[in-house]
Length: 171
Image (cartoon, rainbow, N blue to C red):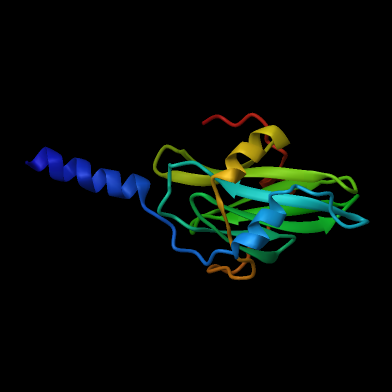
């Protein structure tokens, strides 16, 4: 009996659900067309599909401005100015992770937000993925509403805190 109770609690912890505000289906379907962004801009998709940390919602910032909260099976879309560096940050409530990106005009960038286990706890992270990989994952996600973050933005202390497009994370 104790084993069943323990397994039930563990399952709930690992698979919890997000209760974030979700965009209207018509807006989601438009974003899923993966159309080219407006002139002078690049598209940025950030999604989360990992079951690890599913009950946790994290803030996403672009250049210090709140994009919104992301949770399990949720994606966000925005356009960013092309041809310049941007810092995408995520907060898991304890630490910030920063990723520097630079997009070309008319291109879409796809970032996968995920949790990985550390020595003492799991922490949020991001990696760039291909359009083919993202396209499959995005179909399974709802589109989150932008503009609300729980934690105040904390800028990186120095350049060494910022990583450049991690395409091969250790999961």
